[in-house]
Image (cartoon, rainbow, N blue to C red):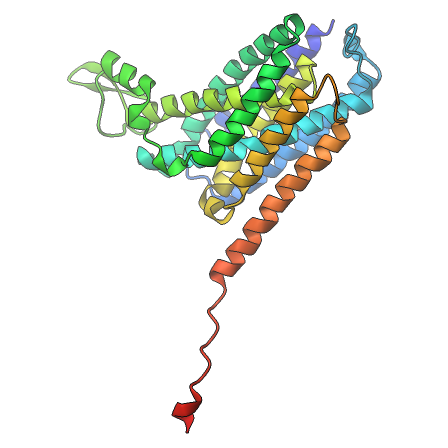
Length: 333
């Protein structure tokens, strides 16, 4: 019977995406910061509302949810796991925003068409992450030691984030771009919101399609890094998938709300490094010295808060006027 919860949730996601593209963004337009902020608040509110629903679903075990032998969950635990997973995935998606901004800049994607790229990018991300989550759950259920591999992967990812700079991004070297250019002619110009166009009667790809390919490929890489993180919080497939979906659905609006201000949050990436490292350590210690979910949530929120406050203080120092020089007393004489 639990399958009906999955069907209902997927129907909700498809309905929201159809409403987004078919009603509110049927006509291509530049997404303003005000509009993006409104959508961001809406997606966060929906996630919190669903978090409350998770509590009642697992507390009353509707349709048999949360009654798997060996993994029984009550409402409080399930709701806390969902919220912690959502915070982790949402915070890690901030690093993805840096990369998306670089991709759009590299291909000179007009602002009016960026929403279309992100919309279809999110569709692909949902499918890829769903498959990866199912595979991850199956691996952990069959090979319990794989949890140590995931933990080590997160720690290595944290180290990589310390040394890799996004401003050195070169999408032209992406293997998908090279493959696409071999299969189709490449148009140098955009053809409105179209991913494909015609050159001398032949089907050709536009720079808009190339940017979509890079967005999809980078999200796959981010998924490999971020999905193992939530396995440190829960092994329940429904909680893992739904928390990931809500984090992804809000990514598009979050990008338009923050893309122009990311340089002001210089220490966010550093805080994400510590989040990944902490989750990796938590995963490795899971079988020997488990860290309670509530304590993990408090630590993660504390790390993110420090990053935001440090960024705000740093930005204020950069914009503070220089102190006026002390007048030369000899000149006054």
